[in-house]
Length: 166
Image (cartoon, rainbow, N blue to C red; front, side):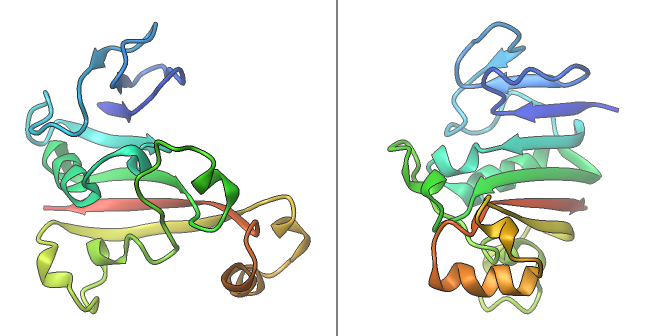
């Protein structure tokens, strides 16, 4: 099973190819994530882990398309991004994009209004909204989501798993 830790930074994972823009100790391959194609073969990976990377890149759709290209059928692409109204989304001036619980819907929901722009197919395996310490006070997920529309600092990040369908 071949696994990619995409945008690993200093979080080096055993049994993964650790890729980053910077060649830190333990990084197996360093390249510009905004330049395509990536230096991997088609259908190379069984799993892609992408923790707090997409918000830094120029074109999220192009990156997801490229991750799709290098993924095998049934590959799980595990993405974690900061939630749009949490301070973690705005406290880093290198963040270029902000995400809500619906941001990845165009990749998997055939009923999405502009789904036809998204020709790569995925199945949603799981989506989890990670509450902040304040958000953990509220016991029900629907209350947390509702309150996040009114107040910031309720949801910390979005953790989504997309299954590649080829």
